Image (cartoon, rainbow, N blue to C red; front, side, top):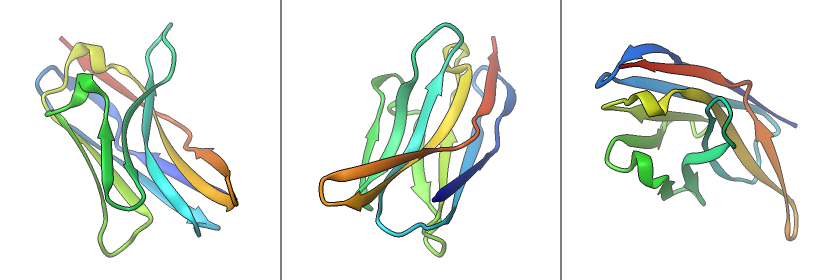
Length: 121
């Protein structure tokens, strides 16, 4: 089992910044992707950003140029989502995720508890 603990959400004015953290613990072997999804009220959960296979990054078009994803070099189990120039439409609950390979061709996804990000306009 992998446990994911998030922190860093809150209330910020439009144009401001927040940084989310996600710390993985437990059986953290063979994790091949980590990142964040978000879900706004009444919307489906959408991928925001991810680090895949250690180095490749992926971003939703709506956050490109504003959000970055990184990991603590010393602690490969701590990931960060730096969110700059926040907009009202970024308001959502943000969920950290981790994908773990458990067998050939089989993965398991774990989720964090979610953290609220509210951007006031």
